Length: 355
Image 1 (tube, one colour):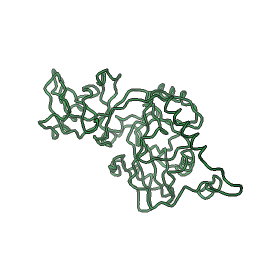
Image 2: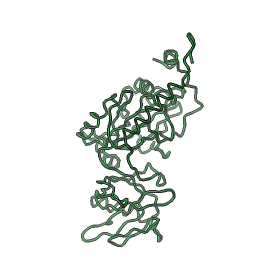
Image 3: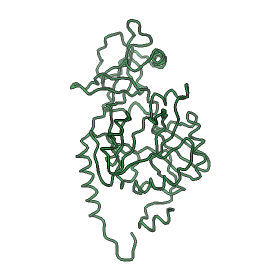
Image 4: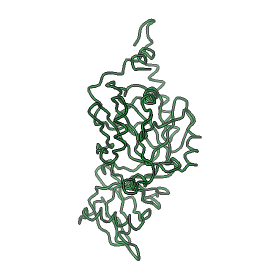
C-alpha cells in the first residue's frame, strides 16, 4: 500500500510534504515499574546499544546519535547498507552488537572496532519520513507497516519486531534471555520529537542508571589504573553524588579509563557537596558519561553495589538525571483517559465527506 492509497482508505490527510526532517531529536520513553497487557499497545525488545537516527537521501546517508554526533565513520557497514535502501527516508533505531544467541550486549558494541566480536546490526523501530512525506503524525502501527515494507534484505539493518497486547509474557521472555528489558508503545501514538512521552514506556529487567563521572580514586593493594569512579547525576545545574564503582573492569579497562580521565583532572570538586572517599581522590571535568547496573537505591539516594557497564559517548552529561520508575498501571490508565477524551472531541464526518 502506498501513501496515496493509505490516505484514501484511512481518511487521513496529515501526512505532508516535508521541507526536511533533519537533525532529529528522538522521542524518548518513560521508565515504569512493571510490565502489563493492553490491547492497542505493542511491545518491542529494549536494545542495549546506541540510539541512532538515519537520514537517507539521494545525496547520501547521515547516521547520528541522539546528541547529533556522527556515526558515519564509526559504523561504515551500517551506512553502506542504508545506501542500498532504495528510498529516501528518516529512520529511528538502535545500533547494537549481538552475540551468537542474538542478544545485544553493550560491552560488545564498545569493543567491536577493536576485537570485531559479534554481529553489528542497526535495529530500526520507527519511520519518520518516507520519500519526502512527513509521517510523524501518522499512528505508530501504520508507520511500522510502511517501515516493514522498505526494510528488505539489508545486511546490517533489520526491522525491530514487536508483538501486540501481551506485554507480561514478552517481559518474562526478556528476563529468561537476560535482555535489558522491553519497550511498550501506544499503537495510536504519533512521533513526538524530543519528548519523553508516556506513549512509550520502558520496563527494565535490571536496575540501570546513566551517570556522570566526576572523579576517581587511587588504586589500593595490587590494583592498577584506578580504584573507583566517583559518579553523579544532574539536578538542575547541580551535580549530585550518587555513588562510586570499581567493579566491571579488567586490568586493561582500568588502565584505559585512567588514560581517558587524566587530561580532565582539575583541582575543584565538581559535585555540589564533596563526597567522602576511602582513598585519595582526583576530581575531573564532568564530561564523560557511563552506564552502571546496581541493586537498588538507598534511602539517602545512593546506588547499592553499582557495576560499570560502559561509557555512553552518545549522551551529553547535562542530560543525565536520576531515573525513578513510575507506576505502570497509573500511567497507562491516564493514557486511556486521554485517548477516550480525544475520541469524544472529534466531530463526526458528514456522509460522503472526508476529514
